[in-house]
Image (tube, rainbow, N blue to C red; front, top):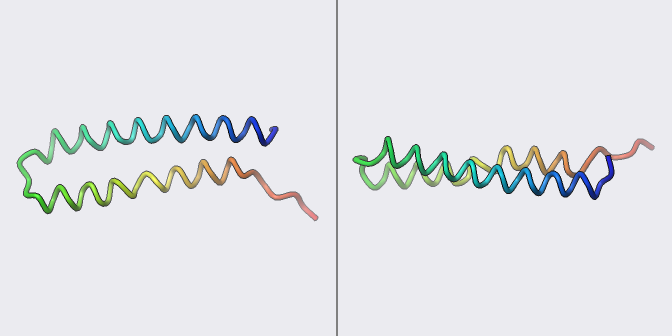
Length: 70
């Protein structure tokens, strides 16, 4: 696949990932953590705020492509 097309597709996928993940994380927090203390909210948003990086790293690695063999 052409690197430019791979970068474009990866960028679109990351944007979709962030939007869907943010909506899902916020909905989950609103529905299940509404009566929890502030520190539970803090820990949840700290962990969920960093967790989206894992699938984004996979997409970025895919965007970089494989290195040519020497």
